[in-house]
Image (cartoon, rainbow, N blue to C red; front, side, top):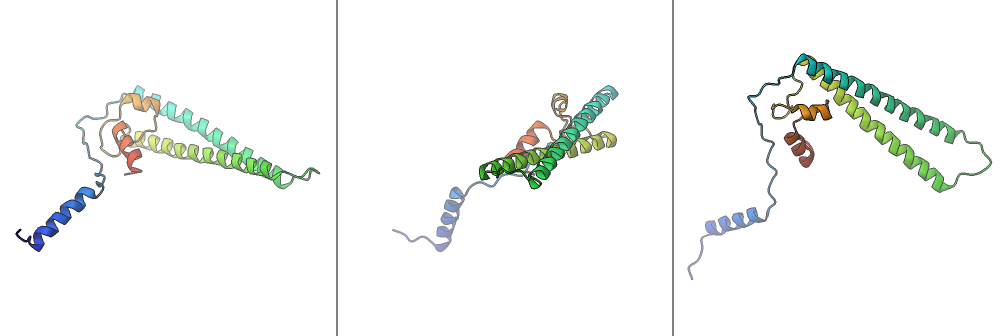
Amino acid sequence: MPKRSTGAKKKKAVKSARRKAPAKPSPPKKRTSSKRVRFTKTDFDRFLKALSEEGQRLAGVVMRIEEHSLSKRSENSGDVSIMPLHPADIGGENYEQDFQLGLAEENRIVLQEIRAAVRRIDEGTYGKCANCEGVIPKARLNAAPWARYCIDCQSEFEQNGGF
């Protein structure tokens, strides 16, 4: 049986290692679209109104959550009742407060996205995907007027944990 050269062994080892190694995720594709964002003034007015209404609603929700959490905290710290609190009650209240504050933080993030969407309207880039620069469909903007990515890029973003 003929001996293989060292170079051939290395090539075979590299091929074998490549087959076993997990594939690296490919970088997001830049899908440049020749389509221009075509919205009428009525469309922009409607999107601005929706963004404004949702922003006001979320700001109110955040304010109520924070007020409720602060009042609960002050009630618990100033509790002078004769009955001692059970540790399970304290844990339940802490969990509820953490949950509510988490909701407030998520709402704050959406508020930031709403402000960014209003800036994009002012800059003339609203409705254009921030990743591929393609057009974000009106149906998506009707559902989430603060959307900054088209559906394909948003899916890719969520699967990869960010761009």
